[in-house]
Image (cartoon, rainbow, N blue to C red; front, side, top):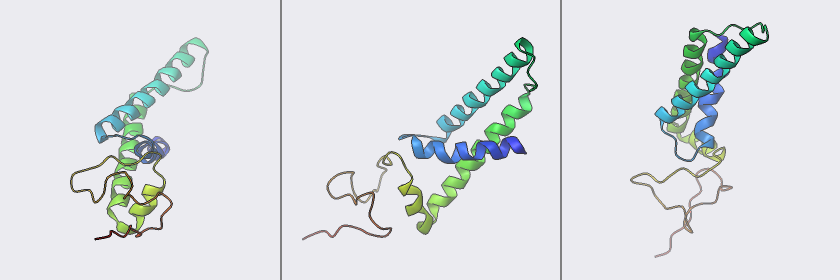
Length: 123
């Protein structure tokens, strides 16, 4: 249970940090991070007599935690009130999708704009 809780923030934060992130790439990053931790634990247990034991269950639960964090972020972005808050924490602008209201340019609202604010269009 602890491993799940530790990796939920990874699933929440990676999509906010990366510009183009699919769920597959994010879960692959979680697998790589978790595998790196487990390999380090295995190496230190055998070379240095460390106290942690590498276990495949840890890898599975870590990835499950990242997936739950990703699902939580997806749920938050579907709620209009929290979607604006989530967008404020993005480190890079979200890539344009089909049906987007405006391109990332002069007509785009600034990142410091209040939620629900939109530029007035003339004409």
